[in-house]
Length: 119
Image 1 (cartoon, one colour):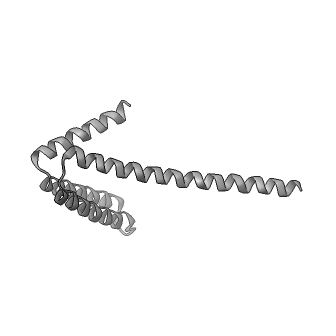
Image 2 (image 1 turned 135 degrees about the vertical axis):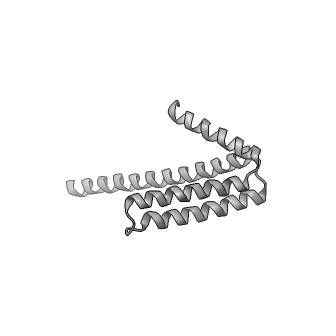
Image 3 (image 1 turned 45 degrees about the vertical axis):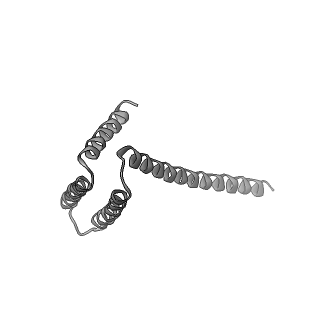
């Protein structure tokens, strides 16, 4: 009887911890979506710009995943490839945004960095 109660208790604890992990992932997803919407509003992106940025970010994530998962590349070379990919992403982002939007994005990024340093 004691073994049954103990195993039931362990099972309940494990199922509760699994549910907690799912909730965290869901909250992160929603906050990410909210952040993207907020950034779109703050920058004043039109539909064409938003669509172009979304496609660019998707392609960037795919390329970065390929580079990170390639075990044949040395770590220094991998780091250099990711830096080049980041430079390319920044250039493409700058070509999509207007000068005012670029300035606003830079100020938002600086503000975000300051908030990380001094919460």
